[in-house]
Image 1 (cartoon, helix red, strand yellow):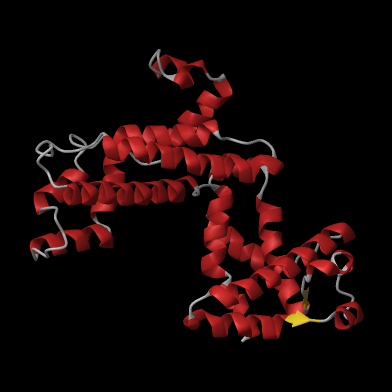
Image 2: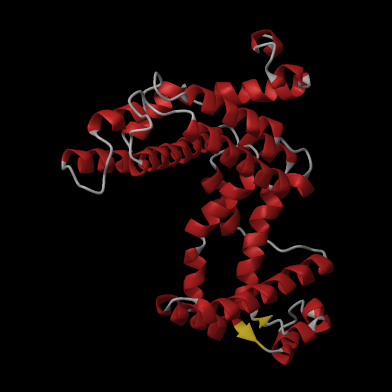
Length: 303
C-alpha cells in the first residue's frame, strides 16, 4: 500500500490535509474509471452523437465542425484529467461525518463543482480560437464543454455508488417497498406539518403554472386534502398544523401523508455516516434525483 502524501505534489493543498482525508480521496480515485474510459462513454452518448450528426449535416445553428467536436474530448486540448481530480477532491473536501451537515455539505460540493466549471470553460479553448473567432462560436464551445462536464460528473457519481452497499436506486426501491413509520410522535407531527406545507406550495404553484400543469396540480389538491375534523377522526398527527392554523396550512389526507412518509423514510434510512462515505457528498442530490424519477408510481393513486 502506498502513502498518499508521497504521490501528491508539494504545492497540492490536499498534501497538507489529514491523512484520513487523503486516504478517502485516493479511495475515490481507485473507485472510478480512468479519464480516457469516461471520455469514451461521453463519446458514445446520444447527445454527443447528435452534435456530430448536426455538424455533418451542416446545420446553420451549429457552429462547431466535426474536428472541433472531436477536440472537446481530446485530452491534449481539454484538461479533463485535471477536472476529474478536482471533482474528486471536492467530494473528499466536503466529506461529512454528521447527518445534520449532509445537506449543507452536498450543496457546498455542488457549488464547488460549478465554480470549477467557470475556470474549466475559460481555460480550455483549442488552437485556432482567437480574437477573430465569433462570440457565438466560443459560446457554443463553452456550452458543449460544460454539458460534457456535467455528464462526466454523472458517470463518476454512478461509479461511486456501486459496491458492497448496492446501487442507490436499488436501495431506494427496497426502502419504498417496505412499510416504515417513526415511533416518535413529534417526528410524525413534523412530517405531517411538512406535508401540509407542501400542499400550500402546490396551491401557490397552481396559480403561476402553465395550463398544461394546472389540471394535475388541481387534481393533487382535490385528492390529497382533507379537513381538520377528518384528520382528527383518522388519527393523523395534525397537532403542529392545528397550532399554525393562522398560516393556512392544509390538512393532508392519509394517502398524501403516507406518500410524504415514504419519502422521509428514504432520507431517514440512507443519511448515515457510512452511506455518505460510500456514495459521496452528492448523496442528498442523488436521492432527490432517484425519487423524482421513481416516486411517480405512488402519485398515480391520487388521479
